[in-house]
Image (tube, rainbow, N blue to C red; front, side, top):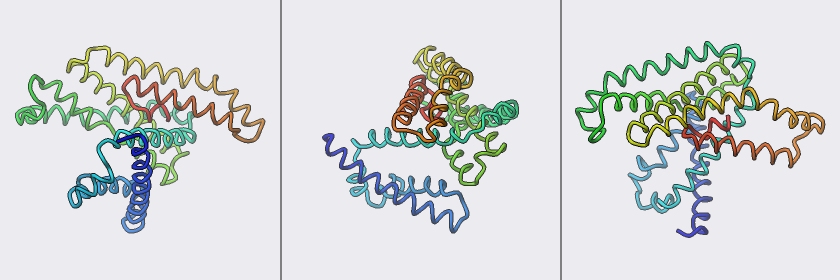
Length: 269
């Protein structure tokens, strides 16, 4: 497909995705009492190969051609990254500082259970030859543990926001634990990839880069961003120039976390 054709396909796809997500999300919220984001996740399954592609494969392939899926992926990364940036705006750092020990304990407990399950089922899964040749039990267990432990961090944030818990101690504790849990699981996944032959650089970059990024954003970041806050307070608005600077910083943070192998959403958050 040419760039022009990709553009045409992208806007039609986005219109369809947004319409179906809003409709299914509203139905799930109204009749099942679930957060709207649950319905939006279901909408993704409905539009994918599991249902739409099964019932009308030719139409699904025409609306979502293979060549356009890379563009959709990047658009989705940008959208979810911006949403997590908005969530981060309401995140109470004071709650994070006071509840760090509790958040870390919750996160470690949330990771321990999946890894114990993975250790238990890894021999059985290996016997089914699901991992291919040359994979040992420890590699399989680490991969399965990381895959189970990784949470839908943006979905957790949406549920907390929809329930009105964003600025509460419970909401901050949940987001903190979810962030620690996900970042830890991505680092474990980097270790697994390193053992698969990508080399130790992958693991060192993810773990070391993640720690350095968090330390920088918590200690140095607020001091660097303080002048922007003073400008906004003095002008009583966010000017176009100020918004441009903030968006540049957001893009760089998302790039940094994507580059080290964790996830762009953490940069936005």
